[in-house]
Image (cartoon, rainbow, N blue to C red):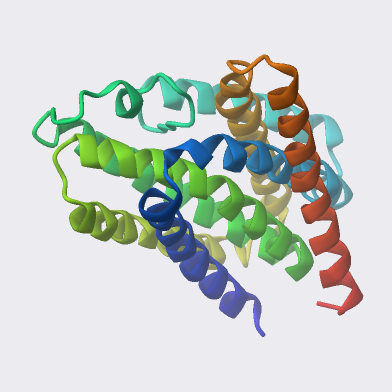
Length: 259
């Protein structure tokens, strides 16, 4: 398949699968499984960053110091964006979705805020997926897998906030699916913008690494520390290791098939 076909396929299918997976969990398993998904997502994100994205970015760049500076600036930028509620995650136990009274809602205000932030987040994910595929197909596939892994717990949190905000389950699912199309839009725009600007690809990969590091370290890991018992700690460590191992296995599988 062509690079553009890979971007369209992974952006569209990955976004839809994340939303449907989150919706299915709320129906079949329940939000208690979020901690399991979060632990796995941490490993997938960090595995993708340190096993694939950063090595490729450094190999493609003639200025490693500039690349690491870009990662630093990216982490600080994502912090500011999250503070402005443009990038919102709900992976922890004390967000408005978990603290909500069972029958209370805010007439759609927090739900609309969630949708705006999630749409922006999905757009950025599409840009990062495109940058990875432009570098090479193997990197693109691994990056897309890592993004999907962390999107499911995020979409689950967003889904719960929408329900608290007064949306029905059907409307929450429909709006989340619509928001997921921003991944495809971001991927297409980035493909046509970056195809003729190969020198920008390492910078975009550095920003991809920054976003994944920030999400894993700032948003996801603090929530795990709320469970300090030994059994929970061992489970979390094993699931993080499983996330890393799955990225390594995906990389080996893709490279073994010459993709």
